[in-house]
Image (cartoon, rainbow, N blue to C red; front, side):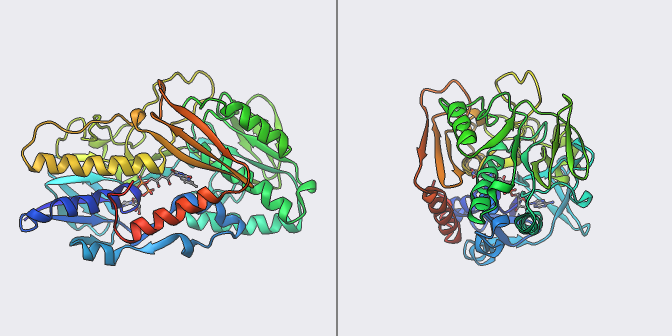
Length: 406
Ligand SMILES: Cc1cc2nc3c(=O)[nH]c(=O)nc-3n(C[C@H](O)[C@H](O)[C@H](O)COP(=O)(O)OP(=O)(O)OC[C@H]3O[C@@H](n4cnc5c(N)ncnc54)[C@H](O)[C@@H]3O)c2cc1C
């Protein structure tokens, strides 16, 4: 029996595994799909922005994947992979177990680089973070304290960060929730970002994006600093490299992302940051039986970053798309086809909804990167119903294993 091993079970890994199992149903006697992941839960990561404000509990945005894997004849190993040796086709697990593969899909997401600035680590107890449930819950505790004893708040992203969109969402939700708790007038709210202009989002902007965000900042009375590079973090102050000093009682900063530790420990497959180097087919540049999808993929921007460094955001839609491409391409190789499907990351459509507190903005473009033939920002000024609907749709789709849906 040959095996296709998928590392990771969230957006990209889950989609890949389900699609592989469905497409290879006819070859069930020859091929098995094995998923390796430290958790049996699917987590709808985008809704973590609401956890600090109590709008979502972590249990509301996750579900158990095991029955779906079982239904689709997917073997599930609930363990973390430790490293991969692509010359031997072996994944080593954290208990030293060895799993051999014929094809490998890497969908292990990212790790956070807290070393970019002193004082950024969660254990320093200065700066909060919403990237993982545990830290989002800690951010909730800090928010509750802030409501009781208000003071200045800093929200933003560090130099080298790529997930500015989620930080914008958290910022606007912070404003909304402070108003709801009737303490907004006691809080000076700052936004700091490495972007060269508001609404660059790491994709070189969208038409009208800068103007719209400037309008939101004015409307919500938020002071902002673009091209911001942080020098050091004190107990109650953030020092920027240009000498600006910002006081804070509570702060949330999005750190830079790097590849997951398992990939950093598999140096033959990754760049210096631990991202997997692939072709436009998401096949590894050197190892033909290794593929990557989602956050794990190395993506280089096609535009110049001249001032403060920042990265390209890898959102849910391209993670899902690359998961599907990888599944199709592995099936093609199994079927003896030579030509693989190719879709450069920057040419995947941009489909995203940014929650803006009481409002939301739909980001739609035919390509993530320029040149684009179509790109539009559509505000919904009445509520954030679209964002909620997307969450419900995604949870429903994956809970039922309908991974082929968009
Ligand atoms: C706060 C926040 C808000 C966001 N909001 C949005 C949004 O509004 N819209 C949007 O489109 N995108 C959003 N994103 C991005 C979106 O969450 C990602 O694009 C998506 O999660 C990427 O999926 P992935 O499967 O590549 O990685 P992940 O979802 O991170 O999954 C990684 C998987 O790898 C597993 N794994 C980790 N280490 C190992 C190991 N050693 N061995 C085996 N498995 C391992 C994990 O358990 C997990 O199953 C947001 C991200 C964040 C952090």
